[in-house]
Amino acid sequence: MITFLGTEDGIRSIRANHPMVDPATRDRIEVDTYRDAVRRSDWYGGAIIFGDLERLYASELPDVVELWQRLSQASVPVRLLNNPAQTLRRFALLRKLQTLGINDFDVWRADEMRPGIRFPVFLRGERDHNGPLSPLLNDRTELDEAVAALAERGIALNLVLVVEFCETCSPDGLYRKMGTFRVGERFINRNIFYCSNWCVKGTGDPIDARHSRTAMMDEEEAFIFDAEIPTTIPEIFRLAAIDYGRIDYALQDGRIRVWEINTNPVLGDPATNHPGIERFDRYVGRSYIRMQETLLALDPDCDDQPFWIDPVRAPRTVVAVGASRRRAAVGGGWRERLLRR
Image (cartoon, rainbow, N blue to C red):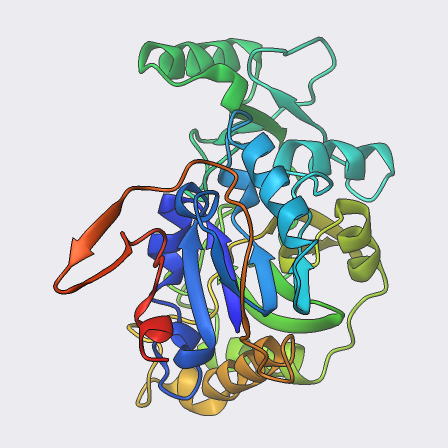
């Protein structure tokens, strides 16, 4: 069994990922929220991925760390990925990469700004994946005004990052964002997103009409299946203590510049990638299959033997169901899969 753990927002997005709905794999994958997981006592052997860690609040972390510790003492074989007591979240990772010279831009919290910020900058949330909270800000006045506007909206400034802009536009006028997964000990190139402006989010970003989409697909296909993993990538994952996730980065004069490591990455959206779309038919469909195979390799023996731990938080009440009694659903609790046994 492969078990994904995440926050409420993260689990909502991952439930629709391709491996979760594919009949060939869905019976070997389950997802659960941290809120429910810390109240669970029943688990399955296999691999348990502590995902979506960047969305956790500091107040939630102690329970999640305790959950990791209890699962690490399981009575059956369990493989745990992303130790929440060790992984670097977005701010700490970007600051460390700047200190080490891997990134040439710095990052600040909006409530701790000091002299020395290099403009332009932009604002973004530390915990979300919604893109920037501001356009590029060219001086301290614009920055102060943008920060004040967020404060007026009630946004906590200690959760807002001030990020120095890093120019990575290629000579052809396109910005590229590459994504490479780590899944246990395996590294997989996953995608290149293109955009005509600096904020690159996904396949729907605006592209100037002079650029050939066929050429972009040629480049992305070669990146996914033929390009070697730069030696810097495994080292960055090691520095971040992240066993599972996707690193998003660009190239600046041939050097990697890292935007983040997402521990709740999209694995493939069946609603927007399907047969009949050229990009899917050429190579995205094959990349889905490879990703599923890599995930399932985390638990090669299909070991979903049940085991039990003392829950970190008090479990929910027991309720009567028909003529029998079972635990009220806790993150799936006594899930349908277990009830079929």
